[in-house]
Amino acid sequence: MPRETNAAKTARAVEVCRRLEEKYGPVECFLDHATPFRLVIAVLLSAQTTDAQVNKVTPALFSRWPTPEAMAGATPAEISEVIRSLGFYKTKAVHCVEAAQMIMADFGGEVPHTMAELVRLPGVGRKTANIVMNVGFGIVEGIAVDTHVNRIAHRLRLSPKTHAKEPLKTEQDLLKIIPRELWGPVNHQWIRHGRETCTARSPKCATCLLADICPSAGAC
Image (tube, rainbow, N blue to C red; front, side):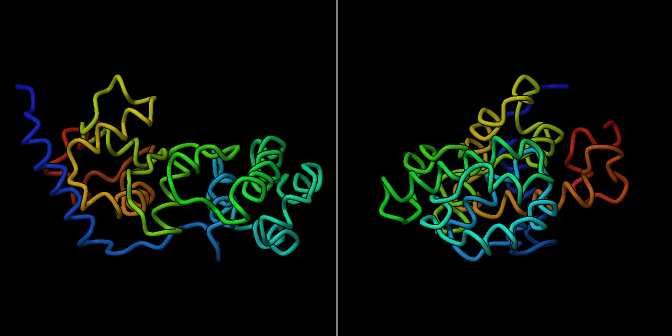
């Protein structure tokens, strides 16, 4: 099979985005939040944990510590008691407190809205920063690559196999072939597609709207 040209790959990626936009339209953030700060904390907590699990603990968490100022005064042990049902809850509790303290000390109590500043926050990597910027501030500088986006990108062969375990490289691959004006909806639309159709196990290729342009259709 001849190697796909970058132009052909871009055309296919654009068609993927068009079809998913047509099917899903605007997709709301799956994590419950009311402010950029709560979004930071919710996304931080979602690492290796489902959004549904995070949404179960955040009402109690934000009831006690709704602002950076309030959470900065908490202890990791106190946070741990509320989020202990989540994976890696002890580490996440430390990050919650330290992130709140940095927001108060370095950013005047306001969540920063640049990539360089956001990734300074403990527990916040590029994926989290992308979501916070996009959802919290309407700023699109990249594509948040979580497990669903990563899986779909590689099944569609929009990123080489060698990058399958490196989300940051997968993101850079996607940014090169997907036009910037289409970046914004990718994360949430692809997550929907990954949950409903292109699942990790037993993907529903027979009914997938991308089957005719997916190199992996029927072979996953």
